[in-house]
Length: 79
Image: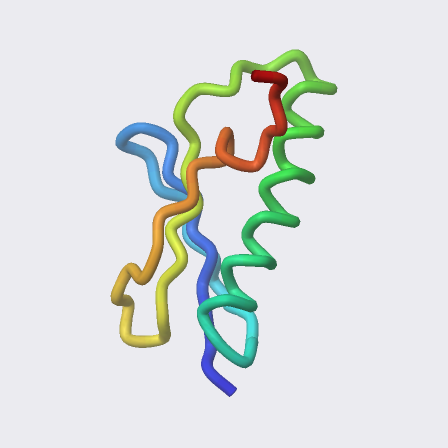
């Protein structure tokens, strides 16, 4: 099973995922990033912090960035 890493980028700061997660494919990694993004956003809101451009960078074991998932993308806002 491929190993995916979920690094968090906030402007020019990168918080690396040191362990990664074994998942079957990129779709599963994307779904996991969405779940984690909701959790992180809930914690930021609860702590009164600003939601300001944080992005999950999903990468493979070789370090290639496969997808960018802005945390705001998982918010469901009314039209």
